[in-house]
Length: 146
Image (tube, one colour):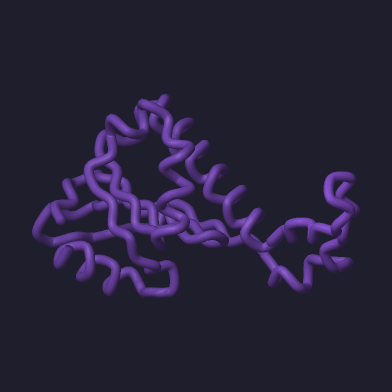
């Protein structure tokens, strides 16, 4: 994948986000951390105080299980929306001309729901991988190989 000089690379998942800027060129990446955010998001079980309930159905006299909410996933989706909002604000300030997003498929899908047109216009690549736990030099190598 081509990563132009001064491109912004966002490496994110549902609870971590790295904003990197390529201070190198397309062949010799030098990704520098501009911002790193990590939020605490306990497992779904640790966030619940109760189990899903049951409701009586007035039609047919049966009972229906209520849909159980996955609080952990809701928080990851909210974090992705916040990441997209931060990208929008930076795009509107003309903070970057070229953007590459690296995120696991589910996070990438959630981000796409919230892309502003200014972000979409600057988007030059997406990579559906979870690289938030990788060191910068490995991220550089994986981007070059993509």
